[in-house]
Length: 101
Image (cartoon, rainbow, N blue to C red; front, side, top):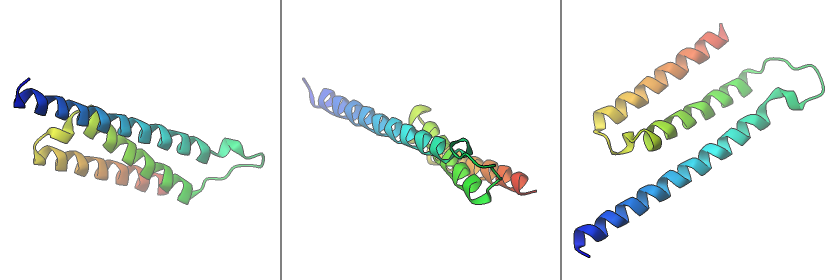
């Protein structure tokens, strides 16, 4: 076993661990979003801007995690990381503005 093999094994272990934690966080956010759904209430449900904003923020976080960890943007050049973050920000801002009007 050479130094390169050891470094490669360590890198794969770190990547696998990061992806596992990303998956755990995605699962937790999904359960949290489900819990926020108005179907759990017995009374008439009305639109709630704070709840909608929270769900959109959770969706933004989930989208960023998926892009970063499962689409391998985490190891991409800085310009790609920034452009995907900007794209997500513009997209979710547009969706929220459309919701408000």
